[in-house]
Length: 224
Ligand SMILES: Nc1ncnc2c1ncn2[C@@H]1O[C@H](COP(=O)(O)OP(=O)(O)OP(=O)(O)O)[C@@H](O)[C@H]1O
Ligand SMILES: [Mg+2]
Image 1 (tube, rainbow, N blue to C red):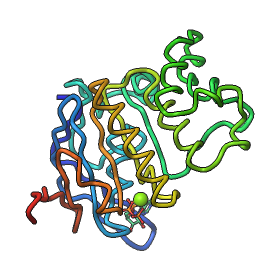
Image 2 (cartoon, rainbow, N blue to C red):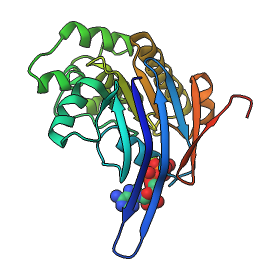
Image 3 (cartoon, rainbow, N blue to C red):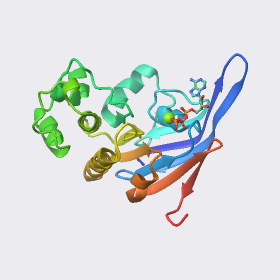
Image 4 (cartoon, rainbow, N blue to C red):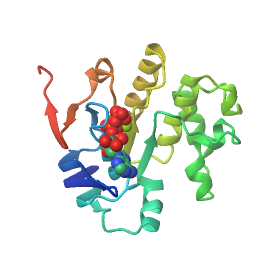
């Protein structure tokens, strides 16, 4: 299994109250499988993705990347493993403004001091930016920036891609284009994708859909 979690709970405690956001989430995602998570605002979708990415710690429960437990690792160990195994995409592209397109895509390689130039080139061609390799992010359109973010997430051939509303800031046409590029590339490279979205129209081609409500995840079957 590329990604799985067991009985995941997350409670936030403030001085005046305790908010139980996730109340026992179980999920299994196979290599190359694409799943969508839908649910109302505030239901805990980003909270769940942050836990699956190892960016936050669960109050209770277990998380595995390629069957390796991550809930027991130190943040230092996790950061190193995340560079190899997990690609992250957010609603905001989070490109580094001082680096050009090529350097943004190969960021994880730069951190490890080895950059695969042929890999960067083929990814940029795949996302339709073969002619924009030396552009700085501020000279790109919103849709182009998000395509760079997709290429960056895929660069290290991750087992898992976690995308939190990756098309949420784009218009319908660009959203569809970015979504199709992400899903096609991930499938061709056998990366699992867990994508949070509000857009019911975009998720018709995913392998499984889940709905997060009241702290629990329910699978939605196509006829529902
Ligand atoms: N660090 C935190 N401390 C306290 N409460 C938090 C924290 N992070 C999230 N929450 C609460 O957890 C709940 C779920 O938030 P989350 O961001 O996961 O929702 P979401 O489903 O991603 O919503 P949206 O669709 O609007 O992005 C919210 O009620 C939020 O206020
Ligand atoms: Mg969110």
